[in-house]
Length: 87
Image (cartoon, rainbow, N blue to C red; front, side):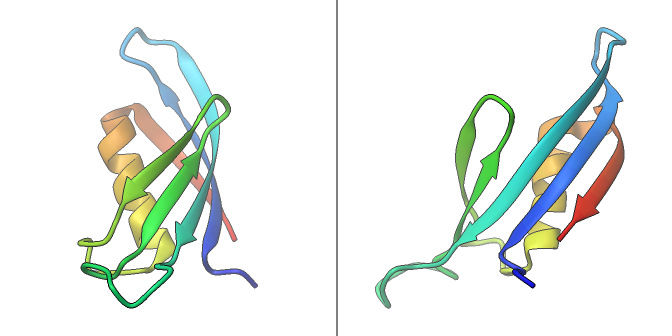
Protein backbone atom coordinates (compact mmCIF):
# COMPACT_ATOMS: atom_id res chain seq x y z
CA UNK A 1 0.00 0.00 0.00
CA UNK A 2 1.33 3.45 -0.96
CA UNK A 3 1.05 5.78 2.02
CA UNK A 4 2.49 8.68 0.04
CA UNK A 5 -0.73 8.99 -1.97
CA UNK A 6 -4.30 9.52 -0.82
CA UNK A 7 -7.52 10.15 -2.73
CA UNK A 8 -10.35 12.16 -1.25
CA UNK A 9 -13.84 13.12 -2.31
CA UNK A 10 -15.11 16.36 -0.82
CA UNK A 11 -18.84 17.07 -0.85
CA UNK A 12 -20.42 20.27 0.32
CA UNK A 13 -22.21 23.48 -0.50
CA UNK A 14 -20.68 26.62 -2.02
CA UNK A 15 -21.19 30.07 -0.52
CA UNK A 16 -23.92 30.54 -3.14
CA UNK A 17 -25.76 27.46 -1.84
CA UNK A 18 -24.89 25.14 -4.75
CA UNK A 19 -23.91 21.55 -3.98
CA UNK A 20 -20.51 20.35 -5.18
CA UNK A 21 -18.46 17.16 -5.28
CA UNK A 22 -14.72 17.34 -5.91
CA UNK A 23 -12.30 14.43 -6.33
CA UNK A 24 -8.75 15.11 -5.15
CA UNK A 25 -5.46 13.21 -5.22
CA UNK A 26 -2.77 14.08 -2.68
CA UNK A 27 0.81 12.89 -3.27
CA UNK A 28 3.87 13.51 -1.12
CA UNK A 29 7.02 14.53 -2.98
CA UNK A 30 10.14 13.60 -0.96
CA UNK A 31 13.35 15.64 -1.06
CA UNK A 32 15.84 14.76 -3.75
CA UNK A 33 18.96 15.43 -1.65
CA UNK A 34 20.13 15.96 1.92
CA UNK A 35 20.34 19.73 1.50
CA UNK A 36 16.80 20.77 2.39
CA UNK A 37 14.85 22.65 5.04
CA UNK A 38 12.36 21.14 7.48
CA UNK A 39 11.21 17.73 6.30
CA UNK A 40 12.07 18.61 2.71
CA UNK A 41 8.68 17.34 1.55
CA UNK A 42 6.21 18.98 -0.81
CA UNK A 43 2.72 17.74 -1.61
CA UNK A 44 0.85 17.85 -4.89
CA UNK A 45 -2.91 18.27 -4.89
CA UNK A 46 -4.56 17.22 -8.15
CA UNK A 47 -8.09 18.49 -8.78
CA UNK A 48 -10.25 18.06 -11.84
CA UNK A 49 -8.81 21.25 -13.35
CA UNK A 50 -5.31 21.74 -11.95
CA UNK A 51 -2.35 20.35 -10.02
CA UNK A 52 -1.03 22.42 -7.14
CA UNK A 53 2.39 22.10 -5.48
CA UNK A 54 2.09 22.74 -1.74
CA UNK A 55 5.07 23.44 0.53
CA UNK A 56 4.70 21.17 3.58
CA UNK A 57 8.32 21.29 4.72
CA UNK A 58 7.43 23.00 8.00
CA UNK A 59 4.23 21.15 8.88
CA UNK A 60 6.15 18.88 11.31
CA UNK A 61 4.75 15.71 9.76
CA UNK A 62 4.93 13.63 6.61
CA UNK A 63 1.63 11.86 7.34
CA UNK A 64 -0.36 12.28 4.10
CA UNK A 65 -3.72 12.03 5.88
CA UNK A 66 -2.90 14.81 8.35
CA UNK A 67 -1.49 17.04 5.60
CA UNK A 68 -4.50 16.42 3.33
CA UNK A 69 -6.93 17.15 6.18
CA UNK A 70 -5.16 20.44 6.89
CA UNK A 71 -5.24 21.43 3.23
CA UNK A 72 -8.94 20.56 2.82
CA UNK A 73 -9.87 22.50 5.96
CA UNK A 74 -7.81 25.49 4.81
CA UNK A 75 -9.10 25.44 1.20
CA UNK A 76 -12.78 24.57 1.64
CA UNK A 77 -13.40 25.72 5.20
CA UNK A 78 -16.90 24.99 6.45
CA UNK A 79 -18.15 24.46 2.89
CA UNK A 80 -16.75 20.91 3.06
CA UNK A 81 -19.50 18.89 4.70
CA UNK A 82 -18.47 15.32 3.89
CA UNK A 83 -14.95 14.01 3.22
CA UNK A 84 -14.36 10.46 2.03
CA UNK A 85 -10.73 9.27 2.08
CA UNK A 86 -9.22 6.35 0.19
CA UNK A 87 -5.69 4.95 0.31
